[in-house]
Length: 263
Ligand code: HPA
Image (cartoon, rainbow, N blue to C red; front, side):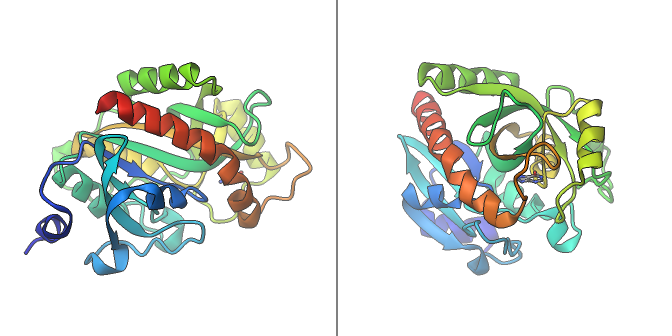
């Protein structure tokens, strides 16, 4: 039995419409879905996703009338130095029928008008890590077009939903910095000068993989802090986990209404 057949034997074969990946401090959203939950540990070759604040299970079920497959946690490049770590999970979401992937993450903001507790809709990214999940991919499909990688129509719909809920959702450019150490203030000044609005340690390799796999993708950051050197906060993972739930409530609200619109 293949991995996908195994999952479908537990969760049913009805195709899912949307795949969701939950970032740091957001994993609990997976627990609000009524459906079938499978621990990553029971999915052969799935990455470990062992970062605290993540919820490493695949949940398939209905959210606001839309059939979804939710990954409650992700594997990051910084865990094992593998930028391709999320390839199997994304291939699995595609094989389960997902047409679009919504990514979420926690990020540090450079923008005073997008302070901690707020959300940022990612419009584009800067791959500041120099890593790419498609290094070693032999096919010509590796030359992925990354213009409008963040799907314009999904972004438009998410922005409309946020506006209808009176939730501020400014757009901005996300820079991927490898982590796991936080950035230095000088690094933040550098990426800010280059055009980024927020920084984080994930998402970018997944967006590249989604485009490679022909999946539409959009992403929203929960801003947990001002980036290094921009405030007196001492950055830590504890701080990220403590702050993520503030934005998570808004994020969950937007996601639910967006999915309702798709159903
Ligand atoms: N930098 C990198 N990753 C992050 C940050 C940050 O400031 N905040 C939350 N995730």
